[in-house]
Picture 1 (cartoon, helix red, strand yellow):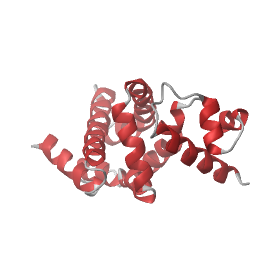
Picture 2 (picture 1 turned 120 degrees about the vertical axis):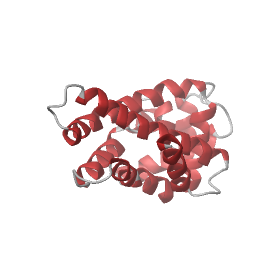
Picture 3 (picture 1 turned 135 degrees about the vertical axis):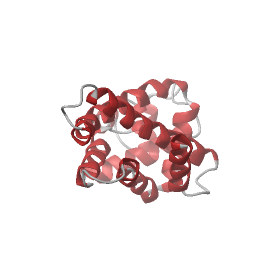
Length: 186
């Protein structure tokens, strides 16, 4: 079976089990069994059981970085940052039921919140250099400003994701994101 198919098999099996019982009381052995694989196969795809829910932050972080780099250096900054977020929205649209399930679990499970913050810091570290370039590397507090801009968009996306999960995906996440951005800008 191709590696991607095994990864998806594990994700679906594990998420089905995790939706029935909490993450902290579920063992890797149970997740592997629910996915029809052995534990060592599980660890080949996921370093920890929490990673089934949170996922690897690097691929979407790279996609976000590329999307932002493709935007012109000129133009309205919020609009450019918002368009770059379409990368994440596309991933959510590709599997909306799984995305609602994962988002709800991340919101409701205290043990996952620290891992989510780690993921966000990885993304921020990937995106700040591009933002510094947009601000101008000669600006005395360019890195601070870049970090604030990246963080504010991330927080808008997080607020949108929480609200979208709360309504079980019944409204478009991009509408929530646009509303969050509008609230911050006013």
